[in-house]
Length: 215
Image 1 (cartoon, rainbow, N blue to C red):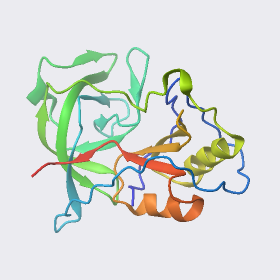
Image 2: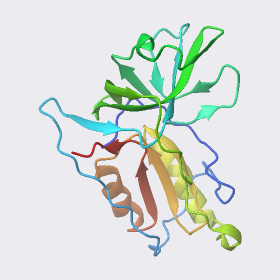
Image 3: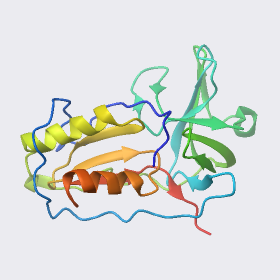
């Protein structure tokens, strides 16, 4: 399942992706898009799962909002100061990263590798480790170069339906390889199974932005 607190937001996914929110027609048959394995870490007694960002991600806190810092898994708006939507961070301290963030117009932000205990029930993460360095972010979606497949109306409708009918979806669109790709903070496999049952296996690929901590 995914947390119920994440705000749905449509984002441009790549030069080969299109987002739509029109009512969908009947689902198309399953395609041959490659499946993405869903990690299955063991939950702690309190139901949380140890997860981490795979690369530095923006942490942002807007003082006027008053509800604390967020891990911007939903992307960052290119404004100054920036804006974002994402996972609420518990136990975050700007003092621990002094000198590693910007502060302007009542907004603090910086990029960090964050590890913590993620709650599936409310889309929050209790911070256990913060690092200022990490690997560069790789391509967000498969690079189809000049051989991109054009999205069909059915695929665009599915992408729109998913983001309209589910909370906690940060992006939903059609990639250039013939699949609908959906991004969430973390899926324990239940969302992927639900969408497979609805649209057929391989039609929709759910990708988790936060990954299990390697033991």
